[in-house]
Image (cartoon, rainbow, N blue to C red):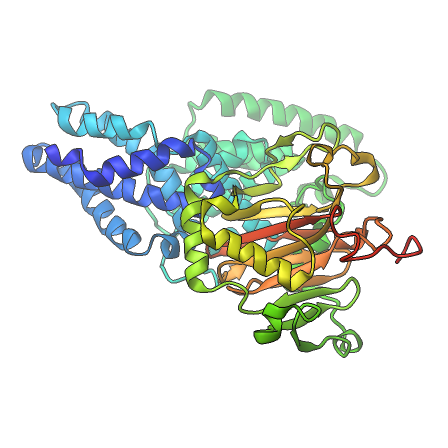
Length: 535
């Protein structure tokens, strides 16, 4: 039993102590949960050796978890690249393990309980489980996946088989319901019914599902179906008090509706409306364009435009270092000019930067346009850290390289930002530069606006994760070791509004990037101003 206090345990305590929930925002940090869960399984196995006769139920759970964790711990990032695995990991640690604790407390299981209780303080929270569920729903919407596809784990580029059980799907629907998201509640509760009708067993009952589903369709305005589902619920559970009250209420509303039926909208027409519900309109005006580009649809790379795109060797205005070893440069877009550079970072440099960045990762923030204060936002799901040149020689080396490639000085640039995207990690359409109504955004830096962006892709992404420009109709896909570069400001200093861009949700994979934002000050002679506003 003393093996509980092991070097591994102490090590992941040290890491998790700095993380503080929000695991779902970084796959890199979620890998720590794999080892935590594996350690729990080991502790549980030791307890079973003592109480095996009385704890056959617990032993079955442990065997299942042991098989899962030995596979996941062998390749944590690869395993968590499948969003269903990531969701189930968070759900297990937030919901299922605590439930197991209650079971074990019925016996003299002081040893195991002590271990579990200590580790629980570092477990994912309700916020994490909700965030993980929302991530799966975001992937569902962006990539037009139906719940059955997600439930069966049929996602492109996956290395691991992962499915959602009846109870997992019910958890998804309940999460949506608790957020007032009745559109996704309906989709996932219907999936639960489908799997139950197919004979799958679980702790979730049809009566529970119909209870949520009937109210959700009512909230979506489908009174007739709400009435039908409530009657089905009462046929399964005649003593269900809330369902009885709802039935009377729905019947009253239906009677009032019948009285208001006018012109050619007949009662029969109302009763036979299809049970198909549209996704609610949200705050993002270019939502459809953005998500189409994420799927690789609607890209406006016409043959005429493609003829204007070339590949070349880039020596950075005859920079001595690049004359000896120029970089391969490829045009990704003509206007505004967006280019990709190849072999910018080696695998060794990437791994070292990830290594020093991981302990510093914190929920990525956005700058409030009114106050200039950094704050978290639901439309940016990732964790980031800022690296200084003193942190490691590799940081200084990469900074110098970006300076040589761009011909811009890094003296007034921001620190190197490293970001790791979580489940369905994304950054919805945004500008990197501050607009005229945000003049104080970079005031404290004293270096002017963000003139250019240099974005390093530090991993391949099996599916999703593109960088898209909705106004252009451009989509750029991550390639490990490459980097893309564009100017955010015109030569006149005016913002180039065409550079509004987004990081698409990661469907399958673990996405790491690093970026450098160059500022105006110090670039006066390196990138001279233009003579007109549109230069």
